[in-house]
Image 1 (cartoon, rainbow, N blue to C red):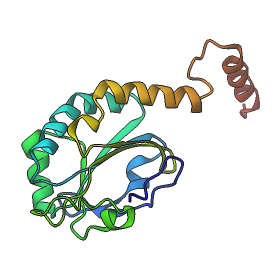
Image 2: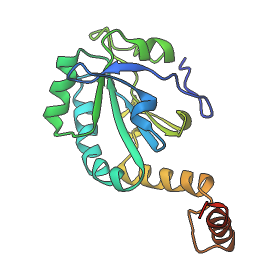
Image 3: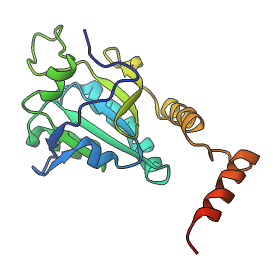
Length: 184
């Protein structure tokens, strides 16, 4: 049974990218929202297709204070193969030692041909690696589309950003108060 639950804080995993450079999830997230895809593995054609679908989404995230990261239960070499095969430009991390799979208990026990496979998940994380939404993509249709991610991220910002709609009196009052408190 997966240990991933809405409301939990995800461990700040430190993993190498396809070039061997180690990154923590918090470093990659910064103060932004984070869409984290926990990939089944490089061997899977459904993963390839899902990453093709994420290409459109990846073009939106830089202007939307959002980051996108994929973690693969593969070596750096295999992680790089998936990244270049799909044309992805976002960060891919290699979890060859299966730290993420083990900590979150997402091993794909039904796959008897690939010992390292994980049940794919897509997580939406608010700052501080807080899990806000979980998609389980064991069946391909369980994976979120770019449009679904757009809707989810918009709903999250409505809940967490007082100035999501800057035309409200409350947002204007907060802005005015901030300016008044700032040193001259």
